[in-house]
Length: 491
Image (tube, rainbow, N blue to C red; front, side, top):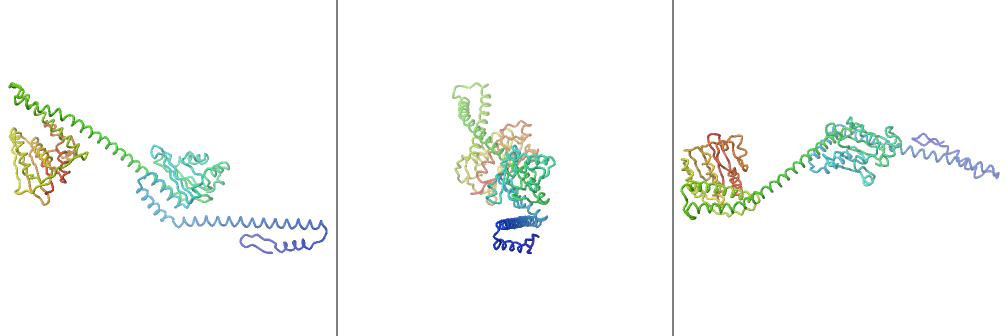
């Protein structure tokens, strides 16, 4: 009697030998021979059944060993290493800037961490995530198996389980598709045909209390699902939603910025076109007003002279506004060609003070030029620099009190030449100073005192000085005055 170790199957090899010997040396009676042959056939069938039983037990034992190894592998990562792996994955998700990359990374990480054959991420909220899906497979063979393209592609029995679990935000796990009573025989066949797997777990991906997708873990062979694995996947689903929400906000912000840039370009084009169209008729108006004032078109009655003066002054203001708009549009479009040359800033400031002498005299204002000797020259476009100084002096005079003083200081400070224009006028409220360089901004005090202006002066100054590599700072106290300081690199 011989026993096959490990499986408890006893097979009588001695009896088999005796029957075989009898069959070979038996009697000549045909009935006896037939009886012996039948007995031998029964013995062979019994031996084959015993061998098949041994093979089946060996296969089952091997499957249990593999399952035990997987469980032991997961135990090695529980719980500290699982937390660390989840933390690393969350960091990686935050670094991705593409929705497809995020969901694919989540699918791969969850699949590898849970030691499954395939993992799919199915997001069903088209408004937020545009029905994004991600997938990962452990091999090319697994990738070739049928897989769902969206939530609606899942078998109906599985969909019913997921919808029921979604109400409690709980995961669904099926250790063995063929043995799960919730599916039944028909449902098990549908799942196997649709997915090609015998074990799966679905972890909800939720925003608040609303399920927006599922993390679907799948294995070809039956396997148990441990709570630490499902908990880790739940944390992953939470990180995935956070990353996707951040990406959606980023994409919306980027779309808004692109739209604002398009509107800004359209605005610049409109302003440039309108300014060009205004320049020619304004030039003609100013020219004819000057000609009329000088009597070139005949004698001007005395009662007309004052009206012509007002018209000429306002036409000049419109000309300055158009020129400022054209200059800013040119800088925005990067169409400026600076004619750089060495310029004496003291000479430019002196000329500006002289040009605005009539305006200062009309309001009993004193303009003091305080320049250090031998101020270093600057490498600038002379025409643009003259406009900067003219705008600064004009603002200082407009916002000064009558019988006040405006001071222009010039000095060399290391590698810079510093121009500071100060007044003791109405000043600027502190809460409005952050908007000083915004185009068309006018402070509440200038509006209250009905001081004329377009709100483009400081914006133009900052733009021109910036193109020359300099900087502009404003120091103002409401009711005490304002100082604007310009720094330009010396030659």
